[in-house]
Amino acid sequence: MQAELKPLSILYNEKSGFHAQHKDQVYDPLMMLFTDAGFEIQVFEFTQQNSIDTAMKKILARHQQAADCGVVVAAGGDGTVNAVASYLIQTNIPLGILPLGTFNYVARAYHIPLELIDAARVIATGRMLPIHVAKLNDLIYLNNASLGLYPLFIEKREYYNRWLGRFKIHAYSSGLDVLLGQYPELKLEVVVDGEKYPVKTPLVFFGNNPLQLKEMNLKIAQAAKLGRLAGIVVAKSGKMALLKLLLQLVRGEIDHASNVYSFSAEQVEIYAHKAKSIRVAVDGELHIERLPLKLTVEKNALNLMVPYVATSV
Image (cartoon, rainbow, N blue to C red):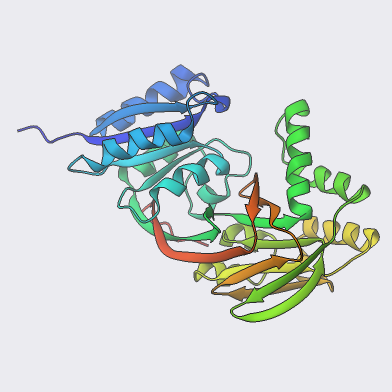
């Protein structure tokens, strides 16, 4: 008797060009590899007209009714990975990644190959690894969440990307552009595991990806690996001090900056005087979130397909 095929759903953003890119060299071999591994494949595209929420409702229903829950695959960058992962936390359905982004921090943190065929082999033959997922209110972040200057960096970076194409250099040039202009100073009350700290700051940053934090040479990378909130607060600083801080970030020396304070916690709440909402950047996407912000980590909340030899950094 033939074994029942396992469901495999591939979800991608129409802007990624997943279907169109190198169809004969990559797309068709991917489909053959998954078919040979015993998967029944369906491909879903999300667009402005067909939202990811609509697609994921169909995908979840498909996988939940199957005898073998199969794998849901995010084909895209870290933003797409985050979006798909947000539907899979606290389920038994594992997430697979076909990395198509600029930085691919989630894939790299868990040793998922950046070559698509090799990444597909991990999905087909790898193992499930439970990973920690951080949350800001109801949003998850696998890499980072921030408020203050960083959302402005993201906004400026996307402006450059639209006009000049996606290049890593824009992550730094956008920061320089913002710092040379006008930027806000936030007056906040940060509550760290019940202890209140009033702060004036241009930037609060939380990281959940040990690799990204390690590449920034931040000691709190170990805290993120252990499933704790890992954060930094930049003290009130003038323009020249912040330009120096940007240079230290590029050099990987930010943890040695005199005006940067790092911490780890189980829970953080952030209040802003007389404000009901605030703009945040979560895994490279901008959101307006209600205050207070509440940050926690759901430990081992997401099953990720990784190579058998992989351990997170």
